[in-house]
Image 1 (cartoon, rainbow, N blue to C red):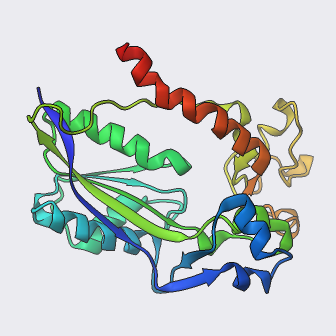
Image 2: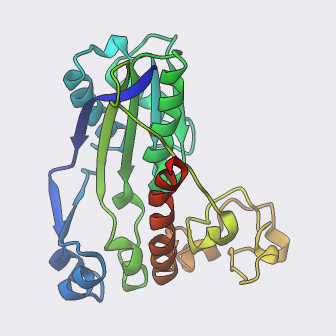
Length: 270
């Protein structure tokens, strides 16, 4: 039976270290407050104007390819998962291809925008492609450049203290060895509470969802501006151009759902 395995792993983190004490200089927080809620003491930030989501992904990919024992020319498909792409479009997949000098136009590049679960979704997709024999060396990258879009004020501390920059990459390859490789993947989603962890503006929604939610969300539009403004002054002034999260709600949801998903394959296998 053909299965997919991880043939090589690589990661990259920027040199710049940002400690909790550094964040205390720009927002009302403490090292104790951050560690108690997240366990985080420090994070890495990329060099502005020198590093991007794509470049970090490329550095991680180079290591994964080398450890997989292949050349970059042997990569036959690219999957790139991120919520902080270099551009709104095109996606980081093709930018990674260019950055690494993989100029073979027969290679496909797929971008995934599933936020924190993006790498897991990418792994499942790569698994299916390899199992069917369609591809033999899939480069899967997960990378984030969060520091370029965080709110470094007390208002944004719930999100900002959590996130940093970095990248991970794997090469997925076929194997026929028994009991080796990816045994199973399980994907789930629930859009009911999408706005609890979201980056609403700028966006193409034009205020569409605002009046259809039980809990009303101020999307920064006046009635006259619905569908006419991609970004406006109100969004800037009210700091809506930064990611927002209801931390306690997201945490409780994660604590509930993670055990269910972890146990799912065991229950199905009896």
